[in-house]
Amino acid sequence: MDELDPVIHAQARLRIMAALSTLEADGSISFPRLQELLDMTAGNLSTHLRKLEDASYVDITKAHKGRTPITYLGLSKKGRRAFEDYMDTLRTVLGEQ
Amino acid sequence: MTDNSGRTDATGSPDTDAPLDPAAMYALLQNQQRSVETQMGAFVPYITLAWGLTWLLGFGALWLIDGLQPAFSLPLGVAIPIFIGTILVSGWFSAWLGIRSGRGMRGNAASAFTGTVYGITWSIGATALAVFGAALRYQGMSAELANFYYPSAYVLFAGIMYIVAAAIWHAVPSLIAGCWLVIIAVAAPFFGYPGHYLFLALAGGLSFLALAAFGAVHQRRVRRAANGGHHG
Image (cartoon, rainbow over all chains, first blue to last red; front, side):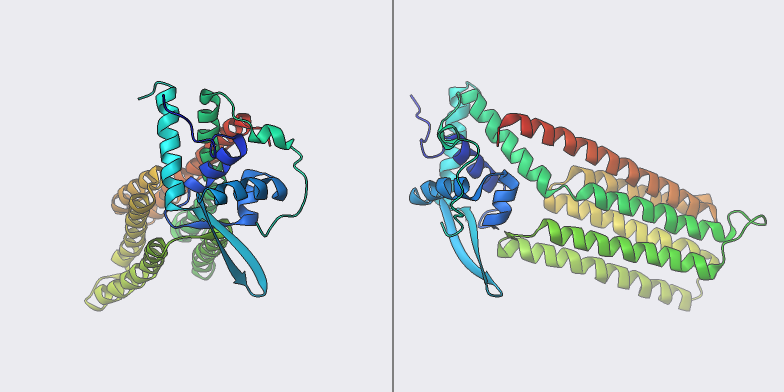
């Protein structure tokens, strides 16, 4: 019946989505801080973020702190909805609803 | 992605892309959320510990002015600086840890407004209570009564601010601490001078230390559960 969103249904991307879902709506987090919170390598995090970005689940904005460029990441509206749908589907599959 | 260091994934990239069974994925999801929230709140027990010590030392110093008379008396010139100094150090420490925990985070405009208004309210309230106290003194409140007014007014105000914080940020420990502070603020004068200072030092200080210990144990438990939920 319900199919789990393949973009989210992978361990690394699920962890990224779960972490970003704890931010408030329209909130964002810098790439290094997210990497620290998830304890992932930069390469691995980048790879999976690109897949989430391709699905328009993640908003990426670039800012500058002095001369240092900083990349900020947050869930897009579509991403937040997709994550909620994913959780609902997972609960349905597990018979919690 | 700009921040690609080109490092290869030490965890073995094909595995991190593979899904687990639904139950394990659900556990992974929940553990990850808890892990992030715990890491974001890791500083809270340290702040609670600092304020516990501040209450013990600060109000303890005020009690020692007359509390052990005639055997011992802490000079007013020592007690007051200890009281104010510990509050300033804890305030600075709390602000520093709060800023540090928020590094790399950008909230929305609404939350920035809430945080700013909440922060400023501490200053407005603290100043207003001092002016109100001065007005009462001007109208004839005795120094003896002022000894009860100031500590109880500030503890009552702090308690209400903790309750407001609990309402804004959905923090149950803050609600418990706030209610407790309101209770001890209005109960303190019943202990008389200088017993009310000792009461505030112990009832406030020890409960903050207990809250800090409880918070630290709770965070360790959550962190352990989260670490068991994923590998790298």
